[in-house]
Every structure is written in C-alpha cells, then in structure tokens.
Length: 334
Image 1: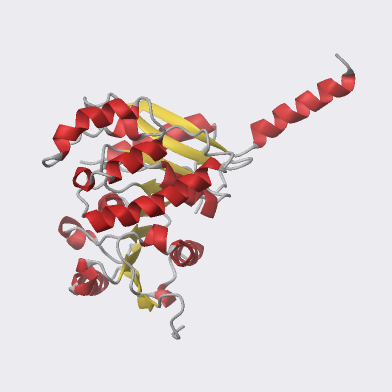
Image 2 (image 1 turned 90 degrees about the horizontal axis):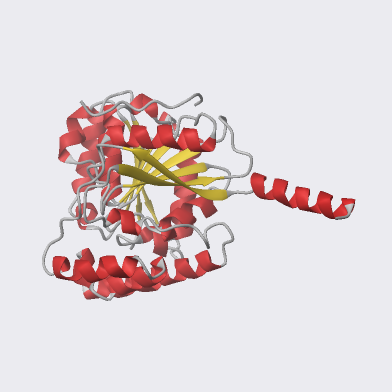
C-alpha cells in the first residue's frame, strides 16, 4: 500500500472520530419505568405494535400509530395534523448523515417488562469536552422519538444533548434515573458534563418541573414546552429558581387562565419566572411553529437567570401586524 493512501485512510479515520455522532448509553438501574399502562382500546393494539417495532423503521411506526389515534389518546384531526408534521421531520432525518442511522428508543419505551437497564440517546458534537454546553431533553407522551432528537440537535449543533428514554411518558421520571443517565453519559463521552439546561416537552414538561424543583442548583435553567407546573410542585418554588414556560394560546390551560394563575403564584414565591404564548398555536407548536419556538428557547438559554426579562409575552402568529461550569450531580428522590 502506498504512503499517500495510508495518509488518506488515517485522515478519514481521524475525521470520523472528531465528527458529531449519536451515542447509545445504557446503565444498570432499579428506577426504569414500568410497562406502558394504556386505556382501551390501545392495549388490544399493543402486541401488534411491539411486533412492528422489531422490524419497521421509526418513521413507519409513528405513521402507523397515528393512523390509530386512540393508541396515543388523540382525536382524528389531531392525529392527521401530527402525522403530516412528523412525516416532514422524518424526511429531514433521511437527509441527515448523523441521525439517518441513529437507533430508535421506542422498543425500549414499550418494553413488556420493567427494564433492568436505563437507556438514553446522546448527541455528541465535534470535539466535545467538559466545557461543551449541554441540554437534557425529557420526552412527552408516546416515547422518545427520533424526530424530536434530531430537531434539537439540528437547532443546537454545538451542544451535547442528552435524551433519556423513560417508558411512554417522562411525567414521573425520577431524579435518581436522570442522575444515573447523566453519570452514564459522562462515562460514555469520556469527560465530565457541564451543568445542563433542562428542557421538557408536554408530559416531559411536568417531569422536568418535578426534577428541577428537587435540585434547582443542578441546572442552568428550566424550559417547559407545552405544559405547566404540576400541583405537587407549586409550593416548592422559591427565589433560587429560574423557569421559563412556552405554550400555544389554543391550549385549554392557557385559554382558561390556568397558566397565567400558575405564573402569578410562582412569582409571588420569589421565583424568577418568564412565560410566552404563541398566538393561534396548539399543542404541537414545536413542529408547526418551529423557528419561533427555537428563537425563544435560544434567548432563554443565552440569559437563563436574567431577572430583567421576567414577565409574560404573547408571540404573534407570522403575518400579523404586531410584531455554569463543572461536573453535574443530580440529587436523587428521597
């Protein structure tokens, strides 16, 4: 073999080693989610769904699930809308060299037995180290989907992004499970992880609030998308805490005034709270109003503790005239 060929081969290997990648992270745990408990008629469909998970790509699985709205607790119009939005994201994944071959966490999320191992997908940018900014994303109802993973990695390509998989909903994800996940991610990455920002979507927003209020100093910021503070967390907020809430104006809890009342209550306890509402947006705004949503998230990440921005805002629909550092240690559940 000629010397130039050897040099080219070495360069390619080094380039691959430095490239961004999606890692599969596992660890022994006693805190994994129990098997999915679904309401009728979903349990009748579950055996066929699990069988399909073993042979079909995730894009097909999601399309199949959305063809049976009851499986995910959706109405027919909601399922049709979400099917179209998800199909577009999976089309993008097929063109993404990093995520095209990424593994699906859905077989784990729909395990028949309580897993004895935890699972997370971890997006690693080029040349990550202990100073690389980090996001932890808690998935909503239905499981940990590749479309959400790719969307956040695409939006924050220079961040480490950790996606714990926790059954079909992260709403009750234990802090101990997340602590194990972060420790396992550090071992896999080969370096400590900087203090992350915690982001929760939908049911994952409830879980994120629960984890954050147990150990607020563990995170740079809390960002909740499409959810509100669960009642069991309201009295836990205090002046140490910074939290951001983003919702669509058509969400029932926004239209009823529940979110506004929650925000006032948290501020009365001294918490640093900011909330924004996307005008005319429904529960799926992360997909349907992606650029607006990401712009708001970026602004919150850039100044997570700024008290000058505390308040509520309504973001007009497009076309309207209106215009830390160091290793992480997460406290476990008592």
